[in-house]
Length: 157
Image 1: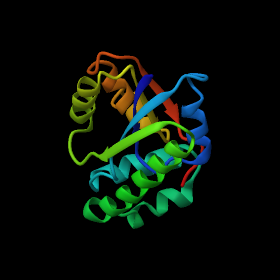
Image 2: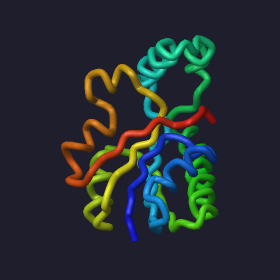
Image 3: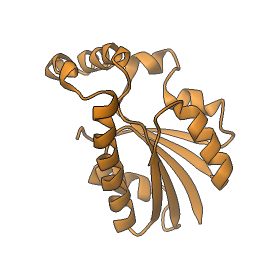
Image 4: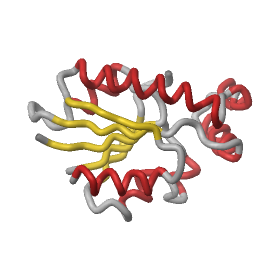
């Protein structure tokens, strides 16, 4: 069985589930999902810039309304539950947890603990972070010791 760590920032859509579960053909995959709820207010500027770059001006204007910190934690738990249910419904094994601090440290620890075969980072585009190679996938490639695949979410939830 192939073992993948799946890093996400929101609930998986049905298109996302189909995408990640078909990457390895008919081979069974065990997914270990790490979800980090929205960050601190400092992240709002980067998210707003990304929204503007994508032409989503309405989204950029609504960044102040997005839950942060503790409020985001309960939404993160729901998103994780939805994602795990969808992965299991597709016939794969899946477990997961929320990350509250230092996502790359948590990722490295999990990869070592379960002897993962790969890491899949599935997020919306983050142009500013990607340009400076500060996104999760770019940073993980230097830290985890297994292949890291960067994929973009199929749609916003």
